Amino acid sequence: MAGLLSDIRQSFHKGNNMVRKLMFINIGVFIFLNLLIVVSYLTTGSKEGGRELAEWIMLPANPIDFLYRPWTLFTYMFAHIEIWHIFFNMLWLYFMGNLFMEFLGNQKLLRIYIYGGLAGGILYLLGMNVFPVFRESAFSSGSLLGASAGVMAVIVGIAVLIPNYAIRIIFFDVKLKYIAFFEVVISIISMYGSNPGGNLAHIGGALVGYFYIRYLREHTWFDRFENTVGQFWRKRFRSRRSKKKIYHTVVTHMKVENTQRPDQSEVDAILDKINMSGYESLSQKERETLFKASKQD
Image (cartoon, rainbow, N blue to C red; front, side, top):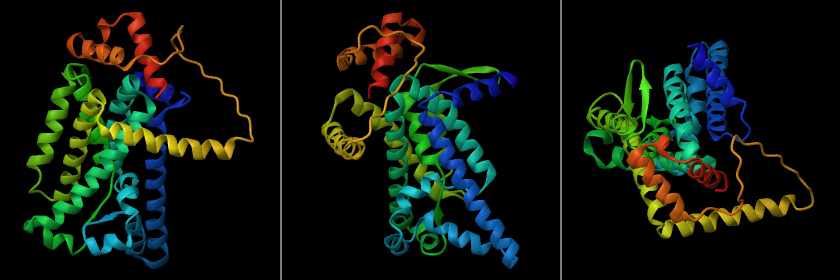
């Protein structure tokens, strides 16, 4: 346990760490929502006032309510109320997110989390209103919250990238493909339980995790669209900062001799080698190439 806490502490002291940023946002929103509920309870004797305010960032199943709160398709993926809900989501995000980030970098981690959350929210809205068995609850009080869809996208994504990579769970080494398979199957067979909407969102996130990694290999039209949108926002951001010089110092654990961006075919060949033989089979040069590619995205 001491070693685990030490690893978590060290990772949180690293500079540009997207896992840390996502966890801070989720934890911050969790504290904010629970403070609303506490204040409501202390002032009115009921928790309902705080929960009604929290509904403004949760994704409603009722499509009419969604039309009045369209931003909830984005905000719900950072909202938690129950302590165990956020605990397990952040635990998965910490372990799988750091592994994902090691291979593909900060930006791709953020993208797959956001895309997974959006897909989970859309599938939730569709499923709760298309399937007759869910429709009644959709028009009553159903709302979706939590990072589960985004986290599921990360889990499935890293499992598709390096399926035979094994991590230790308690006393056993388990390959990522089996972990992802187990999570998806549990979400499917739990559809008839008390949280069908949440499990629909999990499936949406899992689909994004699979297809996002596939598209990285094949470079579809979505790649060009994504790069165009990214360049547009980077230009807008840089234009606001153009009058102010900012100097950055970047310290890495690897020495990279060549600053030119690695060729994508070279990166793909390295990822294929990882799939076949594991990360440990890479040479120092191949590790540096993969590291450089992840940092330049």
